Image (tube, rainbow, N blue to C red; front, top):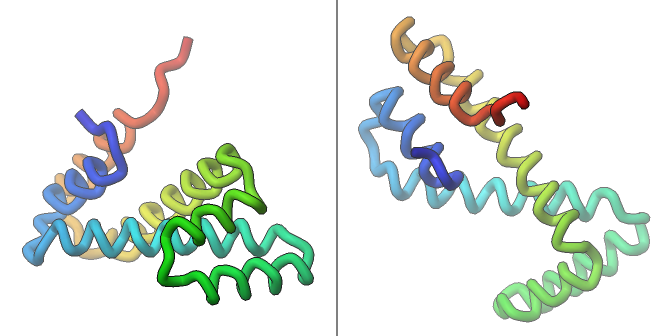
Length: 123
């Protein structure tokens, strides 16, 4: 069962017969998605606020608590979650599109089935 982004990425990597370090790939992928979601959020702010938050994040880059506090001061938990979901979907879609030409028909079908399982059931 796929319950987390990690589970989904692991399933994708297994389907495509990824031979490198899957955990390292997943860790880097998730880190990049989080960064992209933050950049997407920051871009929604007025220019002066963008500069302000960037300066605060830069000065506190080595303090995870201050970074989290800074981000929370500008964005709601809901906004952060929505941005993360959007960035995740975009990144996974782009990755699959990038490797699509290297996949066999059965791999493509297995990926399609995996993504179908993720769709919420219609009521």
